[in-house]
Amino acid sequence: MISIANPIYDIVFKYLMEDERIARTILSALLKQDITKVEVRPHEYTSGRQSTLSIYRIDFAATVLKEDGGEQLTLIELQKTWLETETLRFRRYLGVQYEADRNMCTENTALPMVAVYLLGHAVGDIEEPVIYVRHNAFDYNGRPVTKGIPDPFVESLTHDSIIVQIPLLQGQINNRLDKVLSIFVQPKPKRNSQQVLSLDDSLYQGDADMQHILHRLEKACADKDVRQEMNVEDEYYSAIEKRDTEILMRDRQLAEKNVQLEQKDAQLEQKDAQLEQKDAQLEQ
Image (tube, rainbow, N blue to C red; front, top):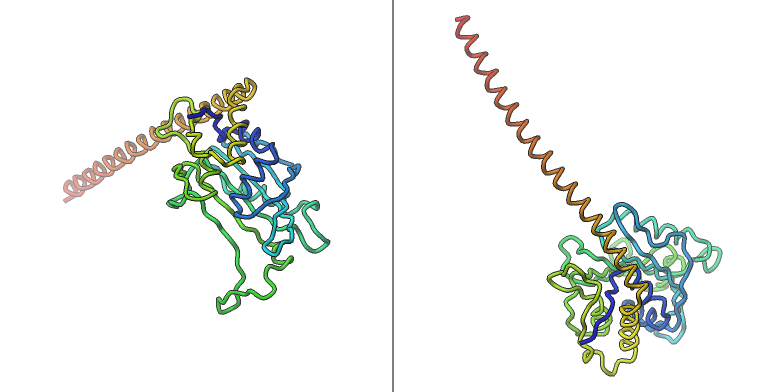
């Protein structure tokens, strides 16, 4: 067993993805395509910590090897979050990429884009830990349109998405993606501190790329600056959880008071009805 820094932390994830080889390994597994080159793109939004959420974003320009042997430059918009967040915030970030001139290939076409979401929470009732959302073209009768597809104009206006629900990752390794994502599997039940994860090193023997990932996560685990930043993140999320708990308790108390007021109103209405009956009897 080896000890590694937990990559769900923003600082560890950043430390991990700054390594070009590791970025290629992880993105290739997610896209199920060979990526020969990865370049980090500058963006307007950074690690977005606000009072209600934390979203960490990295934009990549990836050179993807196509089936015919050619290469395709693809924009990969990767967003990672610990907490449940508003869909609108994800859409705003995507909107920035659609608007950016640097993502245009020509005057009329743009780079194809893939949005990758690493979520620290589950989405609705979806049970699959990783889902692929792909766009297709259809005619009026619902028949797939294949001639001329993919087309630069169509690719400029639509994008595919990959959604990873980290809490649903089980750690079983059945394919390449399972092996790569196994470094994100969180302890169950959760411990008070989850900064360090334990992995069985024998599962990755003979895999040079995975050994490289594990070695870098071991370095992150031993780096005092990384550990200090992880402590800061823990404090931040502890404060968020405390605030959310207080809000929940306050809302519950308000709901109980509203029920009590409704009961009192009902009792008053009953008394009013009884008084009206007595008045009617007196009048008779």
